Length: 108
Image 1: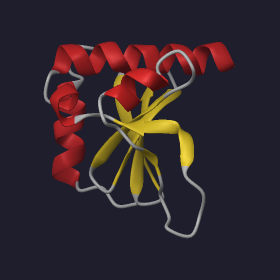
Image 2 (image 1 turned 135 degrees about the vertical axis):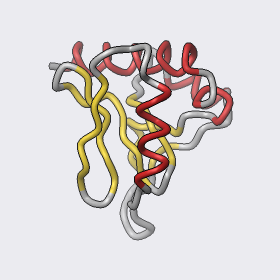
Image 3 (image 1 turned 180 degrees about the vertical axis):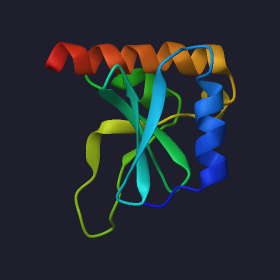
């Protein structure tokens, strides 16, 4: 679960139009937070966003996979990989991330 400094800086830059997104390094990776709420994470230089029944199909249809941080542990179905074309388009990335943040807010 490692994330490079350069990749993390790139990800945060992609969120620059959505003020308040901050990374927090944890376990070699990084959580993505806004208003102290974690909506995504970065592991092995891959960005994952929170999903539930409201947005999971969007990720699956885009070819995304769920987070599997350790080979010997179960897959984490509540975080899915952000497709490269979404990651490269800040407006779309922010749209998808807003949905993930709202999931976290609803679950609190």
